Image (cartoon, rainbow, N blue to C red; front, side, top):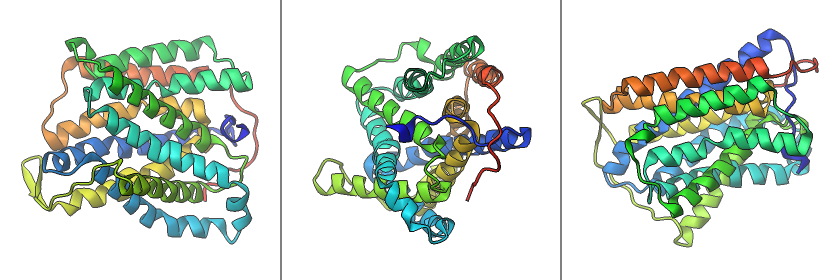
Length: 323
């Protein structure tokens, strides 16, 4: 499992850290858009699995040409790291999304998302146990502050129900999310971020397609128009955005960010996806966040800052290869 234990960013210059944080926020904002885009499709008759399959499929179509170009003929990299690419596609892409949507079939979205986003804690624990990367006291404090912020953003104090079956599915999604950060951060394979993203999307799409063929995933679609912010749009518009923005852009920028920041810090910055999801829902679905949720968002950001301050400065290892 050495392919998923690397956590040293490849460069220490401040500009690389700044670039990594920027890419991580782009990824979080893009990922956060998916819920607001998908909700009207689900209300219009689409099954969650159909939306996810289209999302991953379109993302693969968009990224694969760039992924192939980024290899520059170095096909041996894919052959040598085929197990890692397969693991990334099955766990980080298909597994995380399939388990999450399975969870929300039997439990509220808030608790399911909270369970999935215990992934940063799993990342810290994995790196501590497998690599001896003991977190600093400030990192632990930052994690605790961010966890409280998540509780507030998700408004779990209102008494949401937690279903045991759904919770187990959500834990599966957490494993997929943790795998995403750990594998994405591993630059020792030499596989460019674009190539890893495209390979993962292809493998993930194929895995979901097989599940659909054997009847494990219900596939329902509709051509009814959907509504965002009181504006009707054609059904295919949100699907295109789901594929290009919440799949292609989010995975590529997320992998590049993890290479610059390391799995631990990247996973905590990704907590801002929850804040982004709330804001997107506000803008597109008129689901206005309350004062408590806004306070939670501030705590998440404070926790991320604390985690960043608690991270040791890595040794300089030269320029990162983003493409």
